[in-house]
Length: 138
Image (cartoon, rainbow, N blue to C red; front, side):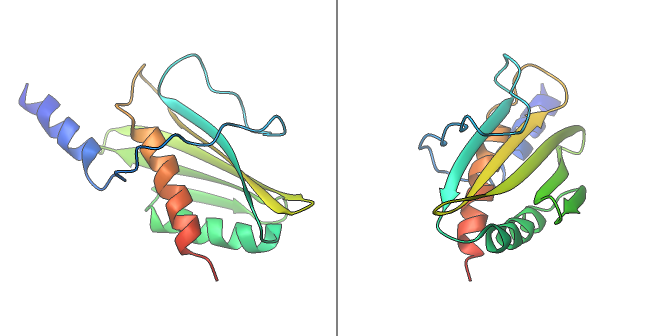
C-alpha cells in the first residue's frame, strides 16, 4: 500500500493543472494510432510559424521536460524521446512537424510501454509539452 501511495505521489508531481481537452489528431497525423487503452495520447495542433521555427521550439520543449533519452532528426522534422515515470515505467513520445499553407502543424504521440492505465500521465505530458512549446516562442 505504501509503494502505491509513493507511485501515485510521484506520478502527480510537476504535472500541469490544465484540465481542458487536448486537440484531436488530424487525419494527416503520421504517427501510429493509439491502442484501445487509456495510456496513450495522440494529437495535432497548428501554429502560425514556419516548420523550422516550430521544430526548434519543440526541441527546446522536449529538453525542458527532462527526457531520459532523446533523438532528434531535423532533416525530417521528427523527434523521439523516452521519459521515465516513478523511475520504473518508460513512456515514449514521438513528435512530427509538417509545413502547412498557414504555417506548420505539430503532431504528438505519448504512450506508456506497459500497462492499461497511466493515471493521466501521458495526457499531462502532452499538455506540458504544448505549454513548453508556447513558452519557447521567439
